[in-house]
Length: 231
Length: 337
Image: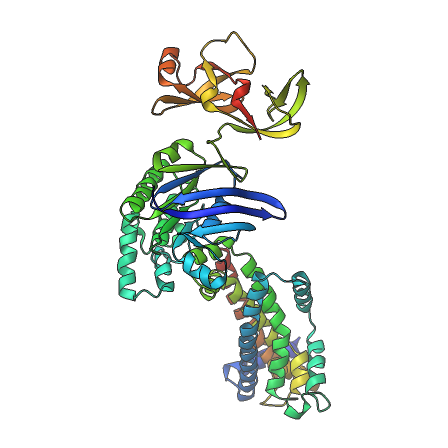
């Protein structure tokens, strides 16, 4: 029990003194998660919108596949991307393995289905009268799409915030594609795993506290947006 | 005769093979207020959406201002900017009243200064200036309807289509809406087409009325419409039973489920038990309206029955609201669909 209390107090001290190593790890994590969430948003929101509003053969199948991908294990994504970017893979010549880019690619693959699926759900719930109103008021297709996205904005934002929460807490992709290089690809979760292996719990607990705080913040945002979407 | 605004030729709209609109030929004149009358499911909203170029017909031709309409995306955009539809229970965008009315001006790239002035003018027209910065979703039904009309007028359209504008608003708002319809037609020269199932209201507001029933143009406004089932057959006559058990003698070749309409002007109302009791039901007068040469009585006779009685006859009866009366439905007064 003393061990846990000591580790916790040391961890608080580490955060309080803004320990350099801790800040670098948190910075790398936040940077990569933000980039991957932004890129996945750019891909997922328009895709979700298009799937929701277009009629094509196999639409239900696409939605079912996307729903299945919501439960995609991070190690599967890691393995899949590894097969493409390792030296033997078809993108091996780009030297992506063990770089931040590799982690970002993996994380994008992980969360695009989340953002797409929740965008489909958000946009489908928007009353069709909004679309008809925009069209009859003289809007072109792009302006009509903007009206619908605007009406669904809180639910879409909630999906993006949820996706951010997923990538910041994932460990499989960062470990397999990033290689846990200090100051470069070491994220909060991979650093925690490493410190645990070393039997050094102080940094682990400190990172755990930061991660929990980030998760809490993400949830507060998520609840805020979901609440607004129900108004 | 005024110039023709719309011409519809052999226009059919079907959903999954079910025909909801089947119009052989229909002309709508420019600059008039036209009322589209019909019960629920008659195809009024579908027709309005087709007239607004929001819904393509399954087959047939639409001519707008002497030009045949080709339903390709590029041309539709131009046409849609001449016609605007205000939906039944319209939805305002999740923003302020001002931004809602500003939207059509914004998409037409109207300069900002002009936009603000125009929005204020339109809000004045619909008596909603004091709600300029209010949250559009916090308005009442009548206020929402008025803002939706202001938003539609911001398009400066040639045609305004209104889907059941009076259906979900109180009497005060109905009066305001009637004034707005009158004003946009007479002062702004816009053509107005509105739907309703209220014959009295439509005759008051519209220059012309078109009656729709089961997707087709009908010869007159059908009233007292009920679902029924032909069950008992006696000699040449058949009886139809209404859902509440009321049996009426009819003339028809049909069997099974039907819809009937009883012409209000052909019903006979009597304050005493009539000598012939065939197709006679006892009821209570629950509403009386004075029309030009008739009195319209709403009789609660197990089913609500509208009865039109010449004023002279009604004055002789000495009956009023709450009095018991007998209503006779002659076999000829019942139309079968």
